[in-house]
Image (cartoon, rainbow, N blue to C red; front, top):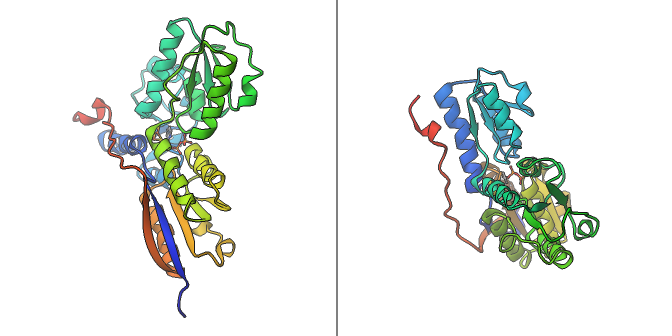
Length: 316
Ligand code: 2E6
Ligand code: F3S
């Protein structure tokens, strides 16, 4: 039987960012240096396939530091941790390695600097997300007010409206965040902040590529996990940019082929924590059902790399 023709648009950039690459390397190098088990506080990145792979090599994933023994190394996930976590690890004389993405750490430092200058912080982020919890946890209770929407901005009651700064989660929607920043600047004209927001290069670039792809196709799949903030934002950006069908899939098995009946094109991208093997698995699934022509939709070229911490570069 002849296969129907299909143009598969592949977003570039897509998939792993420099922070994810570094975080995974940290776990692998810790396993090499100290042997198993290595404890990891929270999923190192939000991807089950990555986590299962590291677990098979001897990593033990836990949610809290209290679930780790004192005498085994622990790694903090790429999303960052409240200040109390490394403080507690030091108190317990544990070996720990912080895999927080340097671009998240940069926001932590920003928050600290504003706090020392006497400013109260407004954080734009998603309630309960580990990055938000970690960033808010850099400062004492009450020093960071969380907002998610322009509507939230209308209801906050800062200590002094003239002494405010804002920071953001790194994986937000660029466009939605601009609306929240505008609401903050309108209600608190003296508020200080970064040039635009703290959304990282990888988030920004993946959203740009999705918009370019949405101009070419009405159906889009984003490879990523349901708890991955940046991946979920890509689905929203695709839908907002005009894709009538934009879905998150963890891997090829999740594809709803029924919903894709009759399509002549598909856009594929992947969140910053989705490994290339899963992207290839999805592409191969399309190739098995369609006479597929792959076209790359490239909107940026990335060459960012982050070094792993020195303790892992030194011999044991
Ligand atoms: C750390 C910070 C930002 O849910 P989220 O998108 O934040 O996390 P992952 O693990 O899906 O993506 C990478 C990442 C890590 N992004
Ligand atoms: Fe870092 Fe952005 Fe990736 S904050 S972990 S480079 S998605």
